[in-house]
Length: 300
Ligand SMILES: NC(=O)c1ccc[n+]([C@@H]2O[C@H](COP(=O)([O-])OP(=O)(O)OC[C@H]3O[C@@H](n4cnc5c(N)ncnc54)[C@H](OP(=O)(O)O)[C@@H]3O)[C@@H](O)[C@H]2O)c1
Image (tube, rainbow, N blue to C red; front, side, top):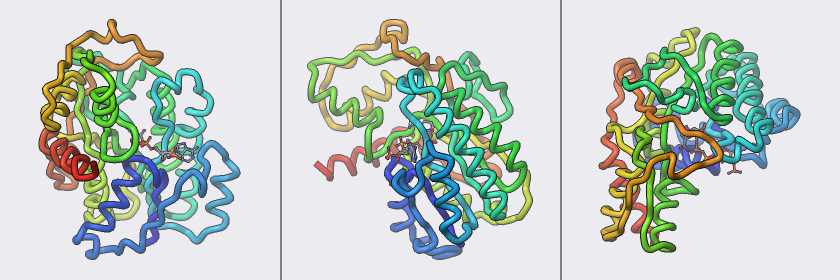
């Protein structure tokens, strides 16, 4: 299998690289050498010609895993066109290339396709209604992909991704903890954190699964996050608990912390479908956070 992974310097791209190189089960169906990781220096997703040149100059792939995206939610409000190019038009182009190459496509999307107004966990077929530019561009990407590739693709909607790499909520909290005496964190937005290494493992499990290997299956959406529904405030408190810092983290409302992009109030997603279809085990958010923090502590 030739597997192309975009976004090699992002949280998920790096976590897939780490997992591919350490996962002993990888030998069942493929080897680490099957994976080709590319960053924006190889394919610039904001440029149609960069995308077509890359695929024109390389052998065909069997699978494309698209981890790259315009992920800066607030910045997207100002840079809507660029966000749309990367999160929507580039996804459409990748789907069209995958289809022409008879390759499969695994694409990552977001809980921000929902407006967050439901009091029940979102299932994959629930009505979408994004409330910010990032969410709208990601939803357009999903829809374009489904239209161009009605078969042989998977969309995984995930939420609140963090890792030991790059900028994310965990690294931001740890930085602010060093810079400030106390912190106020929003407690009326609920969701589920996702440790990027867990998501990377799930993607590799899916690839190994016989269900994924059946050809010409209808393109599907799956929700995936770690287990548990919390607020950002609870997430922050647990981070400081794990680094054993007695730090004052006060709860505030989203209204008290205005941001350029509106955030959905509750994006808790039901994960039954992915569990059932691919026999996935989902870790609890606290144990996954603990794993990440242990790695971060070792790096210090
Ligand atoms: N982070 C979250 O909380 C979250 C939540 C829900 C869903 N998701 C989705 O999960 C996926 C993975 O997210 P992540 O957290 O791993 O994101 P990330 O750490 O921000 O990584 C995104 C990657 O996309 C690359 N990229 C951006 N613009 C590009 C361009 N024009 N051409 C090529 N590459 C470009 C970036 O490259 P550079 O490194 O060069 O900038 C970066 O490596 C994305 O689809 C995201 O929408 C993320």
